[in-house]
Image 1 (tube, rainbow over the protein chains, first blue to last red):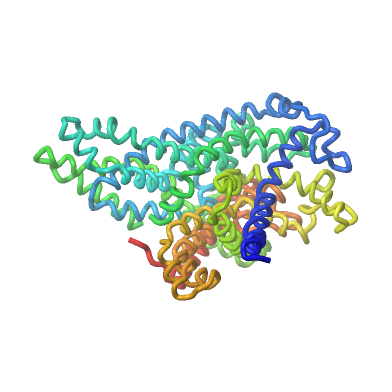
Image 2: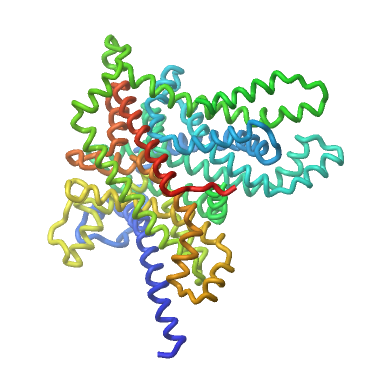
Length: 279
Length: 314
């Protein structure tokens, strides 16, 4: 074997085969769920199993959306997600701006507080938050989830926004202020447009978190009409007679927004995460 | 909490200093800007944590309110002397955390090293490998339950076609396989997080270090041991610590795939707390369990940071 083909042979074992194995492991569950979602009811349990639907149908999607309640779950999740994103964006831009542009005595304590929140076990929150929101009369009210999710996400998004704002040169803002803008105008006209990629990334992180969160949503919601998607899916899995086709179709429905947002934001992921972990 | 006091103190001192000139308003601005976030975090994260400690020494049972009141250490005494589920669930928690974090670190590092090489369609392959990161625990539970299912599961089908088993098996209902089955499903969702953070860290290692190692005659393996690993150390320490806390608390898959069963073989301490909170009504007892879990995590974090001599990069 000459050197070049030896190299190619090496690459087969250090690169090609491992990558193929990695992709099969990662993608197989997705493929199987989609495959199940498009099968007809009888075909799902038929042996031998079919690895592609024999006569693909969208019946399961129709059932999941109209009969099982996924349209309601979807709307609830969307409402909670969008509201949380808006609150998180405003608050973490403000605090991120303060961290990035000012020196002040409260800075270190504030940063330390943000760091501490990362060590709070989420499961510790379920009992006290249930009691707090019960006293406020907000159980099964989307507001309780919106507030909780915003509080949980703000520490991380503040650090993210701090990073993004620090990347915008301070001189741009100062120049605008010399030209007669006040600070808010400078933020609005100079910094904001440059921050849009950062704002998009922050929104995506926050939205995916709210879209996926399960335990708090389960604890703070007890009416089926208020379930978010994860709680609805979990409820359906716990039923005695599970309609597997509709369950798979409902999963695909829940999957689509997360995957689309992820596909858009994944380029920022490695950079953003790296920055956040180091910061 | 001294932290909270400090923040409050700084807010108060800021209010007391009268701005005599206009530029002094600038001193207020950062505090005004961090105020809403601070309020949210203190009210809905720190305050609830504080109340857990209060409830842990109370009888607080929604279904038997006449007994409610101060209980002293009764809840804790009951946990350590009478509770037959406490110690086994704690052991299951250790098993769960160690297997998850250990395997996620190893496979995450392998994924990151693979994805850091140059090859065609690298962007698309990276995106595909990271997908499970964006998928919720409940969704992952649905996907894996469809595959593990006794009657329609693809695992049974594949293993039977390969001749490895002769009869289909209910992987999640058998106490000898349930734990491992959930571990694999959770690994699927957990590896990308390690892969992403480690890949980010790999990319920040200066190329000169590898060149210097090559000049000194180091091969691939040696430069991995002497250049890559030391450079990754801080990231590994921090991500494993965060991950231990996260996995200790994570019940999404346990709750939905096995519900802690069969015969409590997959009940971790957090799963036990969640069960108490969701199905039970004794919040005092649940709070006492939560305080114990918190104590364990705190001790772990302190010891871990000591042992690894984690240094913050400034």
